[in-house]
Structures are given as structure tokens and as C-alpha cells.
Image (cartoon, rainbow, N blue to C red; front, side, top):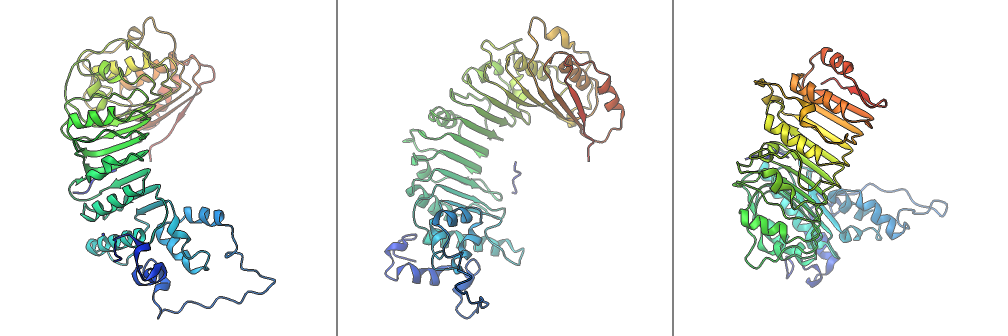
Length: 437
């Protein structure tokens, strides 16, 4: 299954425990395809002789400059800098950020098994020779499937007090995360794609985790709620396409950035429950079909407590669903300091017309004007509810500076003409119309 996105020495990685010493280990173990000088039979081109007039500038670069150069290279390219000089030879082995993605290996074949084996050897060799702390470990190759080697790597980097852990499994079944990850209290960022999470009963939360990104993940509802509530300093949260959830309770009082999407079932007053524990959210993105979930049950005119800090809002909406329109307007009314708004229509649902009209002015009664400055509207097809909503925004946004409109398909100039006829309460407002490719 292909997802959208949307593993020696006396110890496996104990290079310092080898009696051969790191230099011999390096020449014996490192894959020749990622370190070209490991094959003694392959002659390197002769470099020109350096004179006193032409010093070896590469060898005498300061250490912090070398580290800066290496930080911009892939793992494969960083390892190859070992041939430059003795000063560079093992410098790559102290890189704090290890990223294994599509650029870390190159093979002249499309055979997935060969690519997978090459990737496994590469990760093993790099971890074997690496010394010093590891701040970030990212494993995201499009030919990667869930293999048991990942457990060894996870255990190894957790012993290094890893701060950022990213695992994206692009093919095959969802990979069950090793339990050692849940005891890694040094984590500040965790990102998992196509994984299965089952925290042990001893899990006490991530006390230092500030950013959590979970997409195409399987986890029990009670375990998920405990996970979120046990991250006291969580500031950024991304949740996409969960399995088996019928409702969603987010208890994250320090959350500032929230990106959520997917299908959830029924419930009542979901809008009220969703916002009650998000008092300080600054940026909210409601993607996919999540607005349909928020619109279930009773939709209030306004939230009991306004979203004072919310300055950016992105919503994907079906303009032919009155409940979704009501939910979107409720959030708008409850966000007095909102400055940026992105609206994305779901064009696949715009074919069914509303059986009765929606009066925008009536639903916005007794509320002050909005403070929107920038509005972006994508994927519209020109149906009347969409145009009514755009007209409504122009009438109630006195400080609006720019509105960008992009249709789902090239529908000619009629939509542009219609937009230009709308009255704007803001004298500074400009409408930018972008043709679809």
C-alpha cells in the first residue's frame, strides 16, 4: 500500500569499542557507493600541486565553517567530503542532524529490493561511525517499508538523547513504533507517518515535546487523549487521517498552531467541545472533511469564549452544506483579531445546489466588522453560495488589503467580471484573480 503525503563491532554502533580503531573500521565497513575512496583499486584523479602562493584553503577552513558546509549536504555528500583532507576526514561523523531520504543513496536500478537493501546498509554504516550527539534523526525514503531494522535505529538514537525524530513509512502496512521511543524525554519534535502507536502502560508523556505531527496513524482513542494531555508544553500539532476515531477531544492549553483533517463521525456540539481546551491557538487549519465533523449537532452563533489570539485561519468547506457554512461563520464571529483567512472549496461536492438561499447579513447580526487584511479563496467553481460568501467578506472587512481568488478550473472571464462588480467596504482592497493552469 502506497500512502499519500498526505541494521560488526563488539556493539552494533559502538565504534569506539572496536580493537581495530575507527580508521580501520571506516575503510572496512563503509559502503563504497557512499564513500568512493574506500576501494583501494580505484585511482583518484591527481590534484595539482599546491605552492606557497596557492595555499590549501579547504584544509585550513575553521571548524565551524566546515560544520556549516556539511549541514547543507545530504548524508551521502557529507561522507564523501572525507577525501578532501585529514581535517575533513571524520568531520561528517559529528553531524548532529542525520537525514535519510531519497537523496541519501543513488542506484542505477528500479528494483525496490536492491534500493531497500542499499538504504539499510547506508543507515547502518552512518550510525556505526557516528560520534557525538544526534539532535535529529529523519528516515523518509519513498522505497522504505516497515522493517525490524528500524527498531534498532530507534533504540540507538534514543540513547543519544535525540531531540527530533521523524519516521515516514511510505509503503506497506503501518509500522509499530518501538516502545523505547515513549521513554525518550529529550524529544522536542516527533513526526510519524503510516505508523501504529501503542504507548506502554508506564508512559508518562513527553515533558519537553513542543511539536507533534501524526499522519495516517493508528492509535486507540484513550491512548491518544492521554498522549496529548501528557505533553504540557505542546505548541504545534498536526493530525491527519486517523483510524477508528468517532470523536476528538484535544486538551492542549498551550497549543499555538493546529493543523487537522480527516473524517470523524457524528456527535453533538462538536464545535464547542473542540475549542474549549484551545484558549491560545494562533494558527488553525481545518482541512479535508473536518469541518463537517465540527458542524455536527448544535452550531452556536458564537463560541462562549472568543479565540482572542487566532490570527490565521484556513478552512476547507462545502458551500452547499448549510451546517458547514454556519460552523465557518461561528469561528469567524468568534475570532475578533483574525487577519488572514484562507478558504478552500471542495469542488467535488459543489454539484448539488442548495434548496434554499442563505442570508449572510442575517447570520452576522450584532457583530462588529472583521479585521481581515488578507483573504485567499481557492478551488471555487463560481456557484452562487461561493459568490455570496465572497461578497459577504468584502462588505464586512473594512481593513481588507488583498483578496486572491483562484477557481478550480478555467471557467472563463465571467467569474472575474462578477467579482469586480462586488462592492468593497475597504478602499484599499484589491482583488487578484488567478487563472487555473
